[in-house]
Image 1 (tube, rainbow, N blue to C red):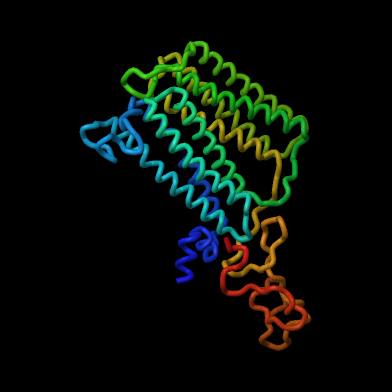
Image 2: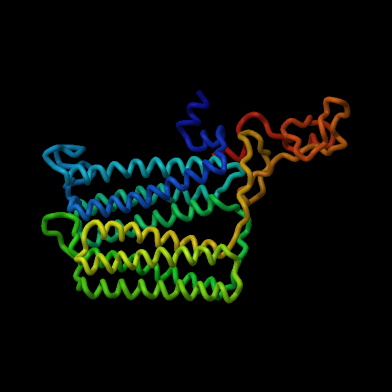
Length: 382
């Protein structure tokens, strides 16, 4: 009964006390959340490009008479309702990232907070999506819906990147001027994404076949502004590349800069082709996917400017000490007994450093040290 109450009260902590993911599992969980955040952006664009934005004309139900799409709603209702259902797949991926991050041992509090941030962004964007439907695809709420989805993309990408590195104090790999240049690049890339919502909001793909209000901008003017920002981002990327070479920066930042440049080139080609071919839906959808890849590449470049070491090996559940490093969120393994305190004899084993602390007999000087028990460690408690 106490275990059942613990499970109901805090299921994440309950699982964390009894399960430790491998590093690969943790990285896969955070990658799944990232991939789903990209996928939900693309499918949301597909809803708009197929004119299915009001396929379900209310929210949270699909219609005033039905919670789900019906055959009378046709293909548009099926597309919109299907996109809504993908939110649950996204939520499952985010939930996996939360559980895996919380279950890591030693604890990684920063990673766990990032994972929980994903959850609240999913909730907030679900509400904004409902408001978008209730306001009949108001272009400003549509833009807000996309920007919040891009914020989720940012957090999932950072969570994935952080899961692949350790929690040591960040050590800069480049000087402050180089870092400021890359931050400037990231700011312009963010502006590029925001102005892209204005291009969409004033363009022909309103999201529904009926008359939908548009943003009061000249589509040609905002498209030119969008293109100008894209060229600024390209120029800054080239500047970063030459500066990194000039200061003999490590290979990591230079590799990320090359990746960003290649993604920008591909995205630019798609953008110009779609513009001069009157915005065909397929190319617009590919361009939307490209925008997510550009932003991920920018984040990877930004985080490559410092290093935090390799992630610590995962400790088996119950094999950690009850002593934690104060304020660091890191559980310290129980130290093994001094070699001279071990019993001598044929059963004492080798005196290597790989001895299991939990299996050492608690006598002599080592008996004052906290030793792991078979139950949940203190680091696993909520």
